Image 1 (cartoon, rainbow, N blue to C red):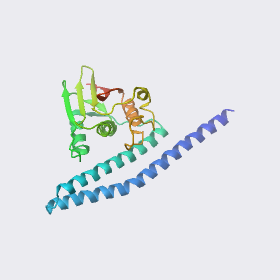
Image 2 (cartoon, one colour):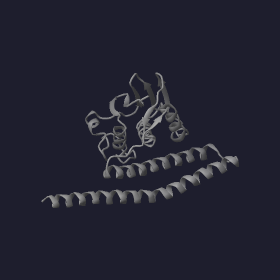
Image 3 (cartoon, helix red, strand yellow):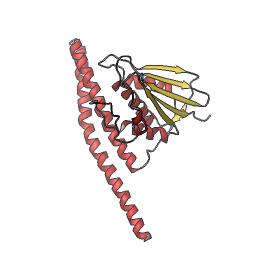
Image 4 (cartoon, rainbow, N blue to C red):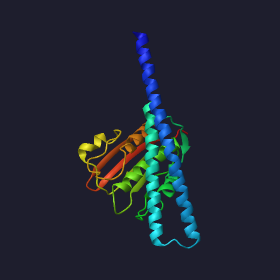
Length: 242
C-alpha cells in the first residue's frame, strides 16, 4: 500500500514537472519574436528621430505598438511564472532594496511614454528604509498592479504611494477607474478569474494570482478595497533587519 502511494506521489510530481517544462518551453519560444519586434520598433523610432521624420502621427502609433508589446511580454511572463507556481512555491532571492528608487525605475522603464499621455504619480511619506525583498518579484508586483490601474481607469493617472511606517512599508496603488464588484473581490487572487465588469479588456486572469504569490513569498500582505471612485490595492512588507 505504501509503495503504491509513493509511486502515485512520484507520478504526480513528474506530471507537474512535465507541465512546468512544457509551459516554460512554449513561453520561451514566444520570447524570440517579441524581442525581435521590440528591437525593430526601437531601431525604427531612433532612425526616424535622427532623420527628423517623427511626426505626431508616427510617434503616437509607435507608442501604441510599444505598449502592446509590453502587454504581450507581460502576458508571456505571467504564463511562465504560473508554470513555476504549479511546480511549487516561487523561489525568492531577497536583497536589501531601496523601494523608492526601485519604483521610480519601474515608472521610467514601463510607464514613461504612454500613448494616452497619462502618467504614474508617486507619493512618498515617512523616512525611507530598506526592505529585504526579491527584486524581480517586486517588479512583478508593481508592474501588474500599476498596469491594471491604467487599464481599468481613464482620466488622471494612477497614484503609487509609499508610506514608511514605524514597523513596515505600506505600498498603495490607487486608481479612479471602474471599480470591482463587491461579490468579485474575494475571488480576485484566484488564477484565471476576471471580474464581471472588465468587458473586452485584454488579460489572462493570472496577474493578481501571481502578485499574491509574490507578496506572500516575501512575507508581505495584500488587501483590496473598491468603490465608485476606483480601487486601492494595499501591500505591506516588513523592513530589513539592521
